[in-house]
Image 1 (tube, rainbow, N blue to C red):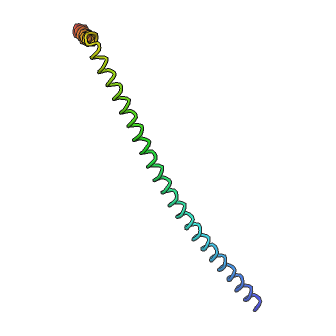
Image 2: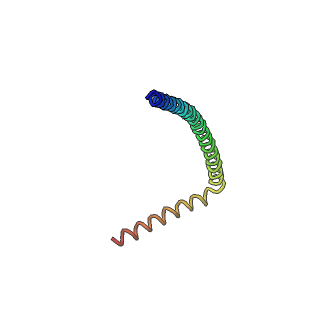
Image 3: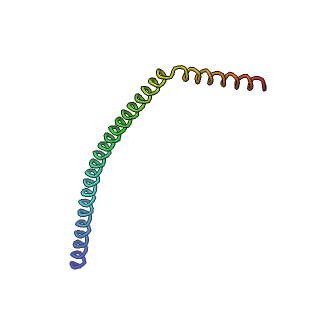
Length: 106
């Protein structure tokens, strides 16, 4: 009976040791998870800043290109005002004619 008691005590001791080790492993996994999460948060924050900076740069480039196009159009209008005026009058005329045709259909 003493052997049975010793065997049960040993088994209980081993089970308790396994529980302790599982708890330690769980704690270690949780620490590793928190560290990884902090690392990912930092990476995402850095990525967000990079994307925002690239977006600002693209917007700046678009603004510069639009400004250049505006300047070219302005110079072209000043160089050829009659042609631009005729074109504008032509567009207005076409719009008016289209409006009359569509109105007449009703």
